[in-house]
Amino acid sequence: MQRKSSLSFWLTAPLLWLVALPALAQIALESQVQKVEHIEHDDGQVETRLVDADSVVPGDELRYTISFRNEGDEPIDPNSIVITDPLPRATRYIDGTAFGAGARVTYSVDRGQSFADPEALYVESNGTRRQATPEDYTAIRWEFEPGLEPGEASHVSFNVQLR
Amino acid sequence: MFAREQAFFSAARTSTGVLGALLLVIVTGVGQAAPAGQTLRHDTALSYRIDGVLFQRAYPGPALTVQELLDVSLTAQGDGLATTRSPAPQLVLPFVLANAGNGQERFRLFVSDASGDFPLDNAELYLESNGQPGLQLGAGGDTLYVPDAGDPELAPGETLSLYVVADVPDGLAGGVETSLTLWALPETVVLQAGVSQPWSDPLPDAGTLYAGQGDPDESGEPTDAIVGAAFGGSSPAASASFDVLVQGPVLELDKTVHAIADPDGGQAVITGSLVDYRIDARIHGEAPLSNFVLSDDLPPYLALVEDSIVLLHAPDHGEGAQFESFTPSAVDFDADTRQLRVQIGAVDPGHSFRLEYRARID
Image (cartoon, rainbow over all chains, first blue to last red; front, side, top):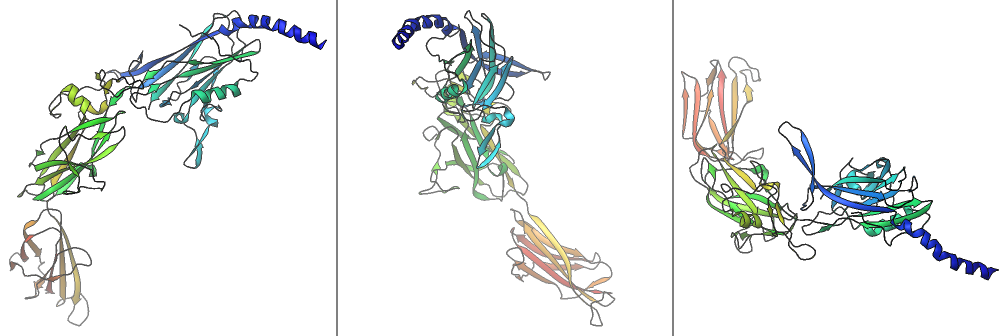
């Protein structure tokens, strides 16, 4: 009896893998980075332009855009898509720039070990505990409430300044 | 266009815990300045569920190479103002140079001629090199700057003290002023833009790119060098000026009554009382007084007591000043104008004089 059960598992396991394989390619994701230029016109209006980030130096503002699409045949479960983005080395997050439609955005100050809303983040500085500022953030997380139907796409973005 | 999932997935039941461990691998560090040549990597972690089964993986993102920023900061110490006397040999004007860029860079230094009411003679530039704060000349002292061969090389953020040494000419009046400007340009700018006189040659605009002139990247290929903001505007940060002011003498006067003696042996201010006046004069500033005369006008009801005038001198100021008798060039009392005049002559700053005399109330 026990032997028959084990044999049954080894016979059916490859079939389960074959069924699961299409899901491997379910979401395709692409990252893009552009340089943000703020141009002040004579009338005082400030125009923001996104240009190629061919050449970056300290002080430049960069926008990272992460686009993703459900390229499979099955819908992605609601409340399941989580995108986590460590801030690139030698950059500082620019407050208020994290975007993600339908997503709850949280931040980390411990290199991605934990995430929380800004008001709940604290850091140790010179032996004292203080509220974290955007400069302290080391990673950003987007948790999406909606799912993603086959063929549907979305994106998140955030800006940083190169130190 | 889209990176496709290929190999990395997991059917773990929990997502955030596993993802956190994944992130620890991805994050390489934050909080550091971005040095020229560094590769700026970016990765994204994604997790999602299909029918409750968790999938997650990390996606490598675009990698950028940080180019070299050519920037400099030059500041004149002491708010860029030096008060001096005339003459003043080897007046020292201290500056601080900082590499405000993100690459290892040599800097070419230029000292402009002084512009203003007078020239500064024999100007020389020294680099702090012996580890002792301030300028030291001679053996074991700081290093005389030699353009090109002696251009200082600074790491990003590194600073260096510089000293311009010059002579203030003789015979200048108090209040005259001149200005000396020091320039510091990254050598890359000097060579690429052909700058030899930064005060008159056109400087490159911020953002100007010199292809392949930056520090090497992680594969050894040179980065581009990009001109920073230090060269823009009417007061570029690549230059700093010292205003040199020959300070005129400043006279501080203080007149007091230090004793009263009435005819009845008391201290009442009545007819016949004798009043002892004291005038303290303290000379401040940097320039000498050339013809110092102390004068005091007596009101009509006061008569100067003959032979009561005493002049004292001290070579310094303050409560501890040691006054000694001093013989004036001349003493004169004009009965018509009722003015007492004591001629002292040339006096250096820092000295004090005390004039005492007695008057009778008529």
